[in-house]
Every structure is written in structure tokens, then in C-alpha cells.
Image 1: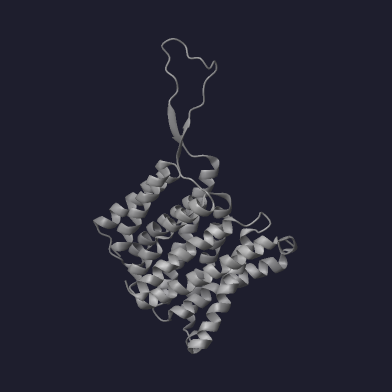
Image 2: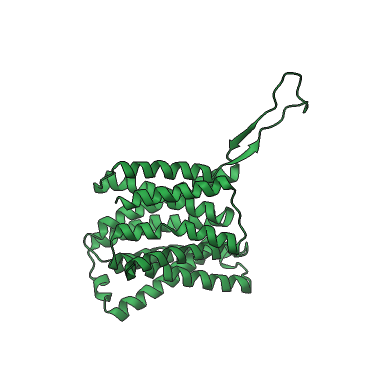
Length: 309
């Protein structure tokens, strides 16, 4: 495995670690705080890299249309990132990662076929079906049906069986995951168009500057959010999350520059697997067998879809 492939795999690990770390923050730390910090730290890191590598001129001289496409995509991506951390804070890490990653790949595939002229063969469609089925299994659970009164059934009457249902929390999480995936897919298409005339560093920098400005401006204008009382433990967790996020951003860009985009997407899409492991070890999250089977099925679908692109 080359350095590009290793970087893509590292991106998956770092992104999963960042997500699990934010789950350990106290209620005082809202998703807007997390999003603003991560974008700001990544912006600073990319500026340093651009200056150190002598590529700052490429950023300044990038075509206006490409920068505009990157910025529009960054707005969608920023909204998706904020909503992703909202979903993480209120739901299961493993389910959130698998749902958003699976739907992101699915939506990206559809958008690629419609807007970029990508080919979609039988394996792609089979993978799409597997993703949908896996996400359905992952986000459902068995629960007893409501019992009628009286509790004891009459002679010859059958007891109510068990049925699969979606709880309100699961519906909220699934809806958020779907919207996150759609926003990230929009970001992907706009970025792909912009990269026809500009480089990856410009794309990466714009994608961090825009959310940093948006989230930072909101915090400056919102007195309540600005005055949140963080605990010392929160600051340590934010420092870890920020470090992991920067490593994820740098790994992703390095992978794209040193290996095929399809391989990068495939290996980076393994983040749900690492998230499930980290959530089980660090957060003690336990998924039932049906959910684990759903996660495995969704991941198999991701491999099938990305492997054919």
C-alpha cells in the first residue's frame, strides 16, 4: 500500500476519532462551538502549509469561478458539518457515522451520474441497494406492539406480535443524516467543477475559511453562545478533536494528490468502521446484532459503489 492509500486510511481514522471525541464534550459545548473551532484550526494549518510550500500564489491566482464554486460548496459543507455534530451530540456515534457516510456515497453516486456523466454499472446499483438496506437495519429496532386493554387476551384471540418501528429520536437522527449527506454531495459536485481549473490546496483552504468566518461571526454576534462556560475537560477534548480534524484534513488532501480519487474515497469511507470500534471501546456504545449487520451491509454497499467509480 502506497503513501497515498495510507493517507486516505489515516483520514478515516482521524475523522472517526474526531467525531467520537466530540461526543465526550459536556452540554455546555454546542455543535456551533465545535464546528467553529475545527474550521478555524484547519484554516490556520492550511495557511501555514501554503506559505511553507510556496503554493500561496496558486491560491491568490486561482480563477474567480473556481473560487466561487468552492465557496458555494463550502457553505453547503459547513451546514452539513454543523448538522453532523448536532446528530452526533444527540444520537449514537456508530449509527450516525454509518448513516451519513452511506447516504453520502449514495447521493454522490446519483449526483455524479446526473451532473458529471459518471457511469453506473450493475455493481453500483447493487451497492446502492445494500446501502439503503443496511441503513434501514441500522436504524430500526424491534419493540413489542401496544397491548390492548384488558391485557389478558380473550379465548381464541392471538397476542400482538413484535413489530419493527422507528422511534422519534431515530427518525430525527435519520433525517439529519440524510440532510448532511445531501449537503455534502452538493459540496462534492461543486468542488469537482471548481477543481477543473484550480488546485486542491485552494479548494481545501476555501473550504475551511468559509465555515470559520460563518461560525465565528455567529459566535461573535450571539452573546449567549459566546459566554458558554467550558470545563477544563472540555478544553482538552476540543484540543484533541481539533488536532484530529487537522490531521484528517491534511491526510485527505495528501491522499487526493498521491492516489486515485476513487481509491481515496473508498478508503476514507471506512470511517464508520473505526467509529463503531472507537464508540464501543471509548463510549461503551453497544449495537444489537441487527444494527451491526446493517452497518456491515451498508459498508459492503459503500465498497461496491466507490469501487466502481
